[in-house]
Picture 1 (tube, one colour):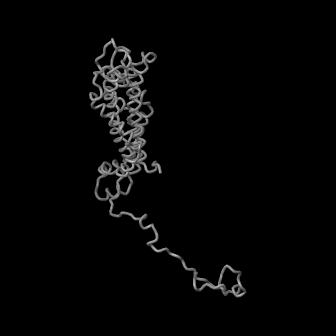
Picture 2 (cartoon, one colour):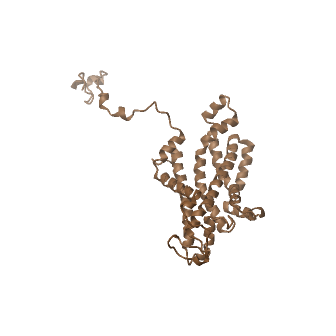
Picture 3 (cartoon, helix red, strand yellow):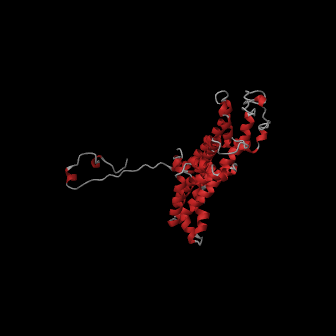
Length: 337
């Protein structure tokens, strides 16, 4: 309490006649300030000003390493890729060595999943069928990102008549469902008579690029007027080089998220086309062909259809989980607090 405070100048008491006449007494209030050594805020608020700031990708990787969803999906995807690249490490039976004596037989030693109607080992076909299904998904995604990314970047960056033309072209393809459009294309003589992994990839790319184009266009429009783009142009960088060097790299985060989820969609699309007899030829082992071949045994031996369907579901789920983890890491607004 201040030394100048006395009961006579206590403002909490009713005003005296002298105070009502304009003679108001004031009091001095001392403020208490804690000593600096007694406060723990110095250690809490300490900032390492010498550390380099993290980039978007470095910050995303820092967050991804802490997410169980990313770790689980990444491990499953690595396992699928290794199986596709080296199937002989996981199956010691040739998937084409089929004997009718084993037709429809159940599991036994060396054949844990039984046999198909043609006497082929189910486990070996599931393992060797991973390569074709994964190839379609990966290369279709690459083609979609390249084609859709280029068209979306040009439309979003330059705008004007180019944006109008590419946007209307994208709307035409976007209006056609992926599977329906692929069915129509795969029935054309040029594709029907030359069915292979690459014809399926080309067909899916032709109808899968509009979504990536829209995502890229929106991201480029958001970044084209950023300060770092304006500064690069002021330093003499051409408009096209600014697009390639600055705008596109800073617009790839949402594209990568959508592409990782779309990869699983393309694997399902290939399986659907093969199930309908319009995808990969029967000479190519894939999960879609195995599911199609298992239709006559659905009632008597459903396990023949179950195992390739399980492999397909796990792979697609892994890429969807990876896309969700990437979205949370690359989009600050979507991060879980």
